[in-house]
Amino acid sequence: MGETRTIGTAERRARLGARHLLTEGARAGSAEEVADALVALHGTDPASVFLAVGARLAGTVGPVADVERALYEDRSLVRMHGMRHTVFVFPAALTPAVQASTTRPAAVRERTALVKHLVAGSSFDAAWLAATEDLVLAELARRGEATGAELGDAVPELRSTYLYGLGTRQEGVQSVSSRVLRVLGMEGRIVRGRPQGSWTSSRFRWALGAPHPERAPAEARAELLRPWLAACGPATEADLKWWTGWKVTEVREALAAVGAVRVRLEPTEGEGGTAGEGGTGFVLPDDLAPVPEGEPWAALLPTLDPTVMGWQGRDWYLAPEFRPALYDRSGNIGPTVWWNGRIVGGWAQRPDGTVVHRLLTDVGAEAERAIGAEAERLAAWVGDVRVTPRFRAPLERELSAG
Image (cartoon, rainbow, N blue to C red; front, side):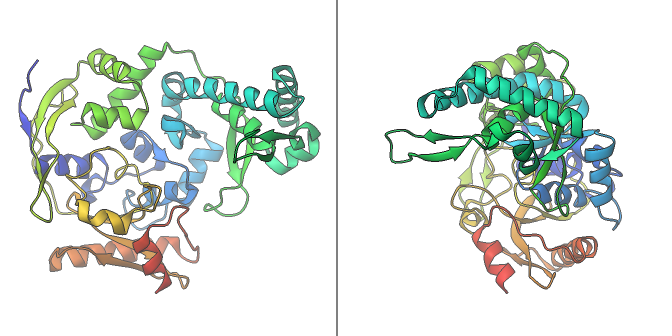
């Protein structure tokens, strides 16, 4: 089937602003509304979850209490491994689909690799691993929550070691603790609870997980694709394959299952005058109506924000010449400044708490005022907390150092 119509760069940016709750009129009233709109919040850097929600809440009240309520009291949001072996925060209702479509296959590979390494580098085997896991689960049932260190004290088996990378340059002694907890977490048998310290901490307590209702993998992939395509359509096959980590055949089956419709994507005119990207994208069948350009908007988004990370092909909102300043050496993008659907700079927090930013292109006086207002709004709710990204891009490092 050929493309039904063309969706240009301006319309893609208008869709992004409204559907990712970044225009002032689209902002949300709760953390759950943000997660529902975005499908998944990157949780590798815990602070990014709070910063991503804060950028999209109406008013000037910060998101900390609201996110903590959703994660640790109501459990309406769940932190778990998802796409590409990465930790995300998902709406609780979506977690069975995530588990069946992306996490379970990864968990099988993770368990297989762990057993292989244990057998090669120790006297432990699959039976020993299963017995150790049972002890961990029993301890969590007794305690309710516990840190990894507390579990290691209560279950000495977790402090056992094995020789990793036998006969290779990476050979070395490793503890089994983190890998055992990782496998249990990926399988959904345990979940990350409230952290030690503030909302920026990555030292989480563990608790027993609730069983996920069974889903057939193909059905689960379609269930996950629908809200993602609603949030990120139009998107290409390459975007979807990258975001999910699925095989090409699985991507195409899921697109067919939701009745996705092909559209033509307009090539992007870069800052330097070069054309990038284009080709064929997909939208849901009820999402073909044109989306007009909305109100101007500014945003300061955190490291690995779900908007920045929503697509593999990013030239339509990120000029290639800005990448060296905004990405670390591993390809993780740092804090970004947005104006009307495109990245125009980066930001950081200095040790004295000041939020500073730098524009990488001329955006005009109106945009500068709006971006400055967003920086003040962010600084107001962050307050005395100091946020240092886990993945530090060159521009963020430079700005934070003053």
